[in-house]
Image (cartoon, rainbow, N blue to C red; front, side, top):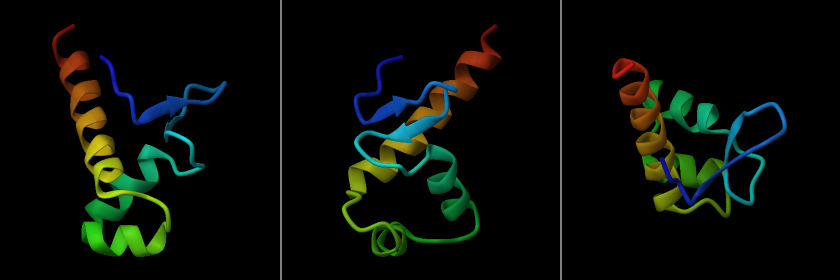
Length: 68
């Protein structure tokens, strides 16, 4: 799985590339009802494609686990 907008720290925690924002933070915001526009306000510098990349990454992780 290639995800150019996602990077990992030494503990294998997924982050949005070039930020300290975790994929988990983005997903938590979406699950609790935040819209993309609200997330972008909360995290200045984040792009809409970064939010979508977090969702795509999470979907790929789930799909990979289910195919085992």
